[in-house]
Image 1 (tube, rainbow, N blue to C red):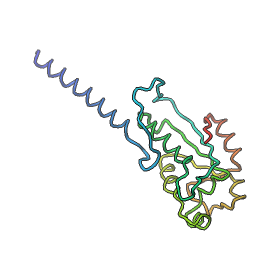
Image 2: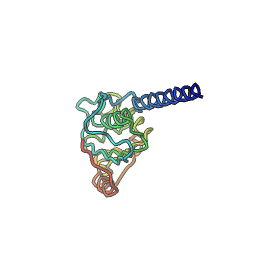
Image 3: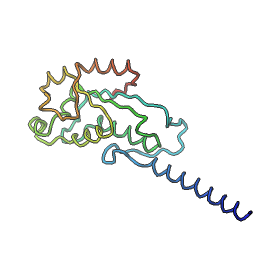
Length: 182
C-alpha cells in the first residue's frame, strides 16, 4: 500500500513537472519567427495578463527611410505578437488591426508597382502575409489610396480598403480597440 502511494506520488510529481515544462515550451514559441525580434523578460514586476483580451489598432503613417528595408513600424506589430506569445499569452486573446495611411501606404504595393516607384522589390510583402496569416486585419485608408494611386490591382491582397483612416480608427476605437500610434 505504501509502495503504491509512493508510486502514485512520484507519477503525480512527474506529471506536474511535464505539464510545467510543456507550458514553458509553448511560452517561448514565436508565431512570426522571421520578423519582430524580441527579448525575453524574466519575472517582470508588471505582470502580463494572459487571459484578458487585447483589442489593438496600430496607426501607421510612416514609411521606411530606406525603401529596400522593412518598415520598422509594421514590424513592430510582429514584435507585439511575438513578445506576448513568448510570455504565454494565447494568440486568440489578441485581436489586432493595422490602419495604413500617409507615406506608409506604399508599403502595401505589389512588388511590380513598388519596384517601379523605388527601383527595388517590396521587402514588406512577406511580413504582411505573415501578419495576415496570424489574424491581423490590414486596412488601407481609401483617401490615401486615391491620392497615391494604390488601386486594388496595385495593392497586395491582404490590404482591405476603408473610406478613410480616420473612419476606421474612430470605428475601431468605438468598438473597444486601443490605439497604438507608431
